[in-house]
Length: 431
Image (cartoon, rainbow, N blue to C red; front, side):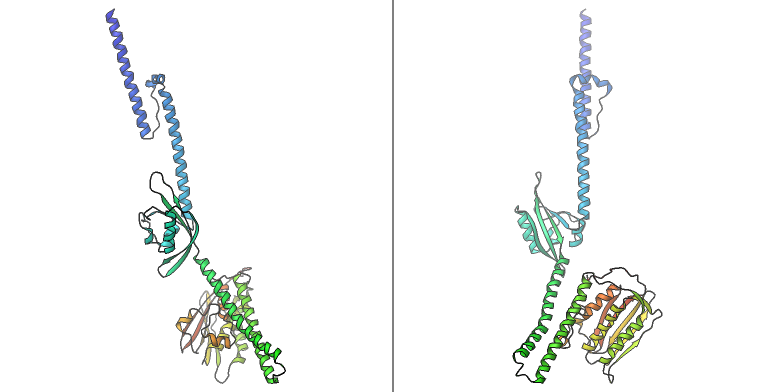
């Protein structure tokens, strides 16, 4: 009897030791699955551990693992969305640490500030040279959130303008980071400066003839009894000349306004370019001194008829020739020559007058730009003729350039395409 009891006790002890081993093995497998983020399935031979709620523990682990996978997938999706957004933003995005070192830079910032791909831990001052940006950085570092601040950044000889915002990114596990977003407004600044310059130029151009008109008209009103017939005629002539000058100026301004606003379209017709040039030259003949001045036409066209707006192209040649007759002092010959390629016609208008200084030649197509300002106003020019010429040529899909040498003359080169389809409402806006 005692032997049977002993055997029974030994069997129970052996079973308990075996099941303890199974439980430890199951727990070890569960720990390994958790550490390696693997699924865990309770083995059939260890089903008895359910009696100690081990199966419940396995269910909780499976639920937590599934939840963790979902969270990781969501975080990965969000990171990809953020990465895609930063990649496609036109604004520059820069993230810095408290030592002003680069942590994250999007492609727009890399392009704007020439930041290399391997930029981690590089100081931001190395790429963004701007006192205003450094002041902004210090304010953000001290906890101030800035909605918008204008900063100027020098890159070589060029100055770029940005609207910048900045804020702290609190980090519980490490030092705070700073994020900056910079929107490039360089083009807007240039346009604003052009607008201011244009308004100032227009005001100046209008003031001169209006002052003259007012002065002579006041004299005619106040002193008409004391003025001789010759004086009154002279005063009236001055008034008329300046009224005409105002009229021409306003007409040119209206043309430029329509071109700038895209309101000026081409009325293309298949016309003879040489015929248009001859008509303009015939109109100019009365302004020449036949004894010493001439306009020579040497056109070589295999395909003379082209899609052009005859009125606007006539204005191009009229303005260029008018400019030469007014300002090419000492000329005795103006030549108009042409040649053709398979796709375009090239026209060169050359005068052998006084020429244009090198510092001025690149500006002659700008509005109100004058090489000899006093003489230009004396001769009644508006300072807009060549600007209109450039607009019209570009509107036709062509190009224009000028070369000159002082004392040797000036050449205006125009290239026009041989084939061009009419596009309703087509216009050119200057860059």
